[in-house]
Amino acid sequence: MSEGSTYTEAELIARCVKGDRVAQRMLYERYSSVMYPVCVRYLGREDAKDVLQEGFLTVFEKIGTYKGEGSFEGWMRKIFVNASLMQIRKSDALRHAEDIDETPESGGSLDYGVLEQISSREIMDQVATLPQGLRSVFNLFVLDGYSHSEVGAMLGITEQSSRSQVSRARSLLQEKIKKLYERKK
Amino acid sequence: MNERSDFDELLRSRLEGMSEPAPDVWEGIVKGLDRHRRAVIFRRFSVGVAAAAAGLAIAWLVFRGPQTGEQLQVPVQTAQHVDVTTPGPVTDETPEIAPIAEQVAAFTRNQSVARAEKVDKPSTPATAVPVSDQTGEPVEPKTEPQPSVATEPAANPAETPSVEPNNPVETQPQLTEDDLPDGFWDGDDTDTRKTHTSQLTIFSNLTAVASENDLIYKASPSHASSQTGKGQATSSVEPLSGSPKFFVPLSAGVQVAVPLTERLLVASGLRYTYLVSQYDMLVNKEKFEGAYNQLHYLGIPLELSYRFVQTHGFGLYASVGGAAEKCIAQRYVYGSNTLREKVGGLQWSAQAGLGAEYWFAQRAGIYFDPSLVYYFDNSQPLSIRTQQPLQARFEVGLRFKL
Image 1 (cartoon, chains in turn yellow, red):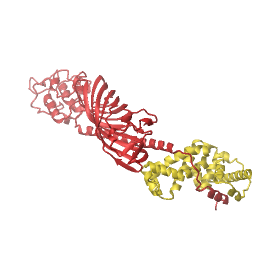
Image 2 (image 1 turned 180 degrees about the horizontal axis):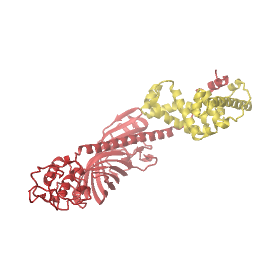
Image 3 (image 1 turned 90 degrees about the horizontal axis):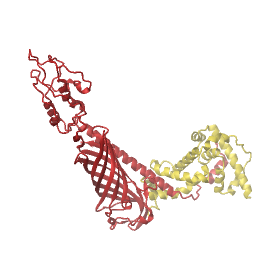
Image 4 (image 1 turned 90 degrees about the vertical axis):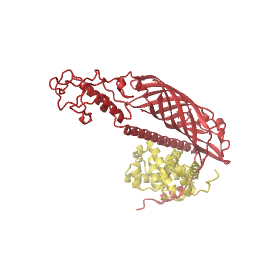
């Protein structure tokens, strides 16, 4: 294990393509702490562990298809987002997406300065407590940068539905963060 | 229109690039990768064996020559056709006839393999073509209606051997079994010669191991280094105590079986075997975890089999034998490096088993051959064979009668 600790990302990828177990381990150690929060945002801590494993298996099996276009971390992130959505579909959570529309939109406005008073981990946990449908849409649009049309295609909903759900999720999350801040005060 | 609010941007900046210690799932990833690797190896092996079997089968069909059952029926049909009771004039439609002995001789000159489709053996001796008393001309033979296809004239007159029409055959010799070329099936199921045919076998097999996890045998830690072959004494690689994993051995090969008696056959050929192990090892004093060892063996098996059931294309047999195998290549894969080392000595083994075969065509059959194999301690590198000397082997393959 002495060699390899100084591998560049390109070298690491090239070795992973060849199935080098040492390089795979190094890649896992380098990125698992970054990809885990992605899974937690979509699934909560309980299911995130399984998807983290599935995601890395997919990464190692598909790594030969990475052509160096765009950042490698971005490429990996897409894989973990897709793995999370697959898991959500398996659990049939999106079937209840229509219920989301019934979620009342909160009128509570948040002083954005509050966000500076709570940790990133706490924010992430608040995102993870959103209802499943809202959480998926909010994660895809707000945090992972997909457009409404892309979100609609990925989740099988209309663009308009994506817009309204993001809006509801935003309001709900602001309310949750506000409550959390008040509890901490 | 910018649909992303300030809140979105602020939230994103807080969570983007966030990292958090992840639960350790590396072991599960390794298991998944091993499963995937095994699946790939097995798929490639299966495709290779299937391609080889298909290639050999096609080659056999192409190069066996133009011999078919229909062609062989010609002389026999003709002999029956001229077995007449009423003399009559010869007409243009009368098939031209050659002496059967000539036809058989011509056939044996042109055919490398002489086993026909089952045809009716002539029930009566071939007799002379009837000749008119008045004119001395050959007369049209009157035939009894014959239900079987063997009594019909050859479909293609061009295939019918011809003779000079003005040179009618006086007598046709009776066709007996002794007149037939060696290997010519006279249609008699009790003829023991049909079981005295040499066979070509193309096989592949899987060897069962005490499996804990799919197709992997995981050894207990205490066995790991103690079973290292003595052949590794001078090696720069040293297996470490741990839990080595052994992937299922894969074999493929060809054998030729020669009958000694009606039921007893001796077979030998070539067998290739691929063994993969994974264990922690020291390479030039440096430790590598989960490194791979790949062994390629080429061996010569020798088997004696006794067929105790042979009926309607189906056979059951028992076999005993052994094999001597030479490791022709050994490769260690650790990290991103590979290391090749020679392996001395031979791996000897003994085996006994039962088998079943089914001949789905006249000269082609399939078989399934489960057996127990014992690998002797011959100072070979650490592998499933040194770890678990007694193994169950399941062999399947194709057989062709030569």
